[in-house]
Amino acid sequence: MPKLSEANPYKLKVLGIAGSPRREGNTDHLLHQVIAGASSQGAKTKTVILSELNISPCRHCDGCIKTGKCVIDDDMQWLHTDLRETDRIVLASPVFFMGVTAQTKAMIDRCQALWVIKYVLKLPVAINPGGERKGIFVSVGGTRLHNLFQPAIATVKSWFIALDINYDGEVVFSGIDEKDAILMHPTALKDAFVAGQELVAGNMPK
Ligand SMILES: Cc1cc2nc3c(=O)[nH]c(=O)nc-3n(C[C@H](O)[C@H](O)[C@H](O)COP(=O)(O)O)c2cc1C
Image (cartoon, rainbow, N blue to C red):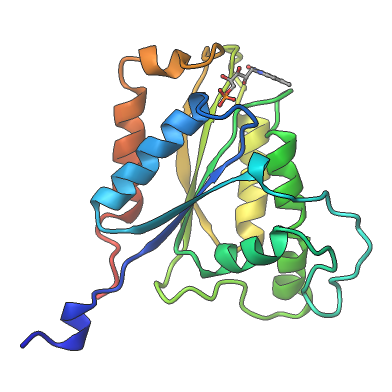
């Protein structure tokens, strides 16, 4: 007779966030692979598509400042909970004017309420049972500028700090512009799958 813990092993939760407004575009393809890699290691995965959600920009109304709860009643209310409960985050956004997409930035800015929980209320942001939280950034850009991903990476790192998530690296490809261009890349999809495996491998709680 297996022990309960053996019969029901904890599955690391991985949250994928699709930040491109172009459905089934290049970052979507990469995100699918990362999530498939994580799933192949036994993780429990969920993907949210920001362009299909109702997420208003932060108003800086300070309505969250005493409670850590955002006053805007939209999809960010449940996404806050997902962001706090997950063990891993995979944020996928193409480079738009050297940053992340508007959909992604709106979601990030709305995490000001979680920033309040951490820095004003001094309460735990992470309410996941799996211990250390980690995340990676997945991106592409049409150009091949040498610093193409640096501004977006700085934004993602700043967001991860507020959410108590350790930045675990990026999966990024420059010179990828046309829809499906990433499918022609010799290693990108495999690289993304392996990144998903590595994000969870060896980290399943006992
Ligand atoms: C509004 C907009 C802004 C963009 N800005 C940049 C940019 O600053 N640098 C760059 O290399 N590519 C830029 N691109 C190109 C996209 O990053 C590229 O087409 C990418 O493959 C889109 O990814 P997706 O298929 O996941 O949406 C921009 C595209 C759009 C529509």
